[in-house]
Length: 167
Image 1 (spheres, rainbow, N blue to C red):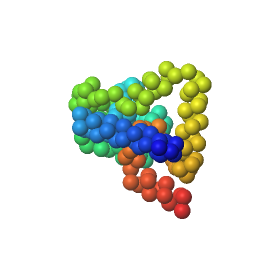
Image 2 (cartoon, one colour; image 1 turned 90 degrees about the vertical axis):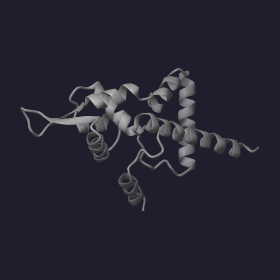
Image 3 (cartoon, rainbow, N blue to C red; image 1 turned 60 degrees about the horizontal axis):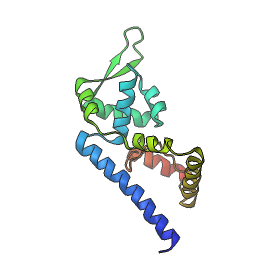
């Protein structure tokens, strides 16, 4: 087998692992990876607002607002207006949200970060350099992406926006 074939197989395995984890997460908790990440951030910081969440998970505020709307509709989070400043809204997990979060599997990127952090610095740098080169070779270096290990993490509107800017 030629080297390029071996590399493409390895890439396909990574894509497949991400897809399988996303399906497992959805099946066991009913959440997507972005939803899980957002809920984890809301759980970490009592009364965090949506723009703070967006910065922490590296997604656009519009995408985060869309996900928060879905989580609120599912009864997993609640929005509470501050009494002193009615313009500010804090995000909180509901009891159902806390229960789902307690049962949810670890986010794939957390598992990845654990293993990646255990590598020697030179190996981390080598992997990063190789992946950046792969991204360039696949003409993907200009594609906007958040650090989420999920295939369908971006909403259709953000995909269309990315396509429109490349036009």
